[in-house]
Image (cartoon, rainbow, N blue to C red; front, top):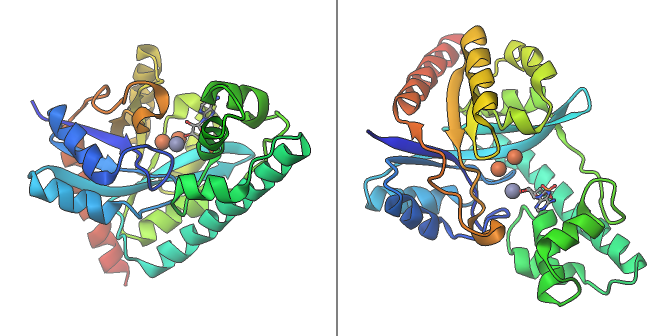
Length: 281
Ligand code: AMP
Ligand code: ZN
Ligand code: FE
Ligand code: FE
C-alpha cells in the first residue's frame, strides 16, 4: 500500500531539515507522497519539488496559514498552491513581516526582564522569512540564556507568559479564499488542538475543502470524531505528522501514514475546483 505524510515543516519556517533532508527522510520512511506545509511560507517548495522529482516521489506544494475565526486560532493548510502566484505571495509576505516584528517585540520583552538576547541573533539563527517562537527559544538555548527549549516556552514564550506577544492573524475566511485564488485546496489543520469544532460549520460555508483527521497529537477517538465530521460535511480527509525535524526529539515524519487513496481524492477535488473556476471566468 502507498502512504502520504501531508503536514511537514522545514528550515523555511520552524523545522530543522532542509527540503532535501526532508525528502531523504520521506524516502527512508517509504512514503509515496509528501506535502510541504511551512508556516506562512512556500519558500521551500521549489527545492522540495525538485528533490521529490529526482526520487520519483509525489509532491504537493503547500503552506500552513495561521488564522482566526471568532477569536479562535485556527491553522489552515493550503495544498496544490501555485507557488509563484503574486497575490498569494504578497499577502503571505505581509504575515511574514508580522512574524518578524513580533520577534522584535518578544526580544524587547525579554530584554526588559534582563535577558540580553538580540533580535539579530534570532534572525541569524532562523535565516528565513517566517520566523516564530521556536527560533527565539533556540536562540536563548544557543546563547546559554536558558537551559532548554521547554524551559524557554514555560518561563517566557507560552501564551500568557511575560515575553509572549499575540500575533495579528489573517481571518480564516480570507485564508480559504486566498488558497482557492492560488488554485489550492483549503484544509483545517489539527482541529483537535485548536478547539475549532464550533467554527467548522462556518469554515465549510466558506468553502473549506477538507479536514486533517490524522495528526500526531490526535488520539484515535479524535481521529474517529473528525472522520465522522468529514463524512457529515462531505470533506476531504487528510493527515500528516507535523514533523519539525529535530526540534522535538525524534523527527515525526512517517509516524502518520495517510493511505494514498486520500491523495487521489484530493487530486480529483482539485481538478473539479479548477474546472469550476474556469467556468466562472
Ligand atoms: P508561533 O507560530 O511563533 O506562534 O510558534 C508556534 C510554534 O511553536 C509551533 O510550531 C509549535 O509547535 C511551537 N510551540 C508552541 N508551544 C510550544 C511549547 N510549549 N513547547 C515547544 N514548542 C511549542
Ligand atoms: Zn511549527
Ligand atoms: Fe499548526
Ligand atoms: Fe504545522
